[in-house]
Length: 445
Ligand code: FAD
Image (tube, rainbow, N blue to C red):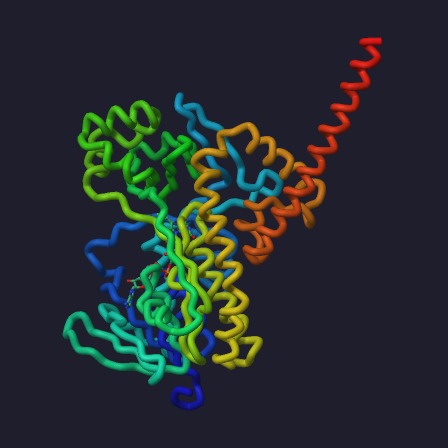
């Protein structure tokens, strides 16, 4: 217990998930100390270059609502009601996320979201934020962490009733946890990287608004999400080998005119060449581990616990949901920290594994399956049955994006739905064959 019998909590990482989690803890009345490696992004000259806008959906919104900042976030977000598919000839097809009830996801700037979270956190008098402070080491025996002030290079040690690590996919705490018995850990890099381009504000209005645009090309794809200033953030996902094969401006332009012809005038040839060769493509990692806690004080959340490839747009949403769930468990258990982190860990792992796998699958769906008639037929069936049995038949994409079902439950639902559809098609096939055989018999004799 911290002073005056109030729990003290250290949060490491002031990214999206760490700053939201710190708000939840401050709201509970805990004394919160947040250490963030980077300088304060609200005053930093150069923001780091990672996905400058994100898709926010139900799970993330629910958590933001619980701490009273959903409204301000949505005011600066752009609704996306479906995917807009671009074919090779530049023709487009709109595929709504939820044709029945019109629910949508929102494109929001990563930095704006982080800014709002940090500013909200600062409003609590029981919070101290230290930027330019890096977690260096962890001692589970002494229940301490060492943190370096990156300006003075001074190292200090800290203890708290609860130490939450939201330090991202390459978490320092997780490295220490890997040395503890029975801790399971795996990481997978996909052989595709990503690179960000931009459609400048003057060309933004030429894009069909309120959609997540996709150029699916089988083995790779490009997507675009809208920004408030009319620009669009364009992300190209492609095998590293393919990136390497484009060695100069001529090869790049040739590839773009052949593969994404309608996107070239929107991005602009010069900007395309400039942005493409400015940075190397980034890697995409998926991390699974369990448990998420050590002893009675240490806990992993967000990407530190379950980094995933970005194709379901759920990494941040799942991390926000972690904060919401942890808060709910602490509430139900009357602030019993040891019991709560053990329960969180036990309850959350399977859902996190499920969404990591779904995210991998969704890359194939987005870059390839969406263009196939079988995908459209299945979507048609799903929507029809959803319409008839709204409570019972919730299609996978809807349940992941718009429901509060655990991710594992979403996968289970999909499995029984698949079985029903298979049986239906099988029975339909049998009846058709029988009718055909009967007709043939009459015709022959
Ligand atoms: P991070 O955002 O990585 O933040 C970790 C923080 O910890 C950072 O601020 C870092 O500086 C700090 N830190 C690291 N090490 C230390 C240390 N030793 N000491 C102190 N501080 C430290 N998710 C969605 O929900 N929707 C999307 O549309 C979406 N799009 C994406 C697109 C791309 C291309 C990528 C790569 C990811 C996308 N994601 C999306 C996933 C999302 O970005 C992550 O899930 C989310 O950022 C995780 O937040 P986090 O706070 O756990 O980790």
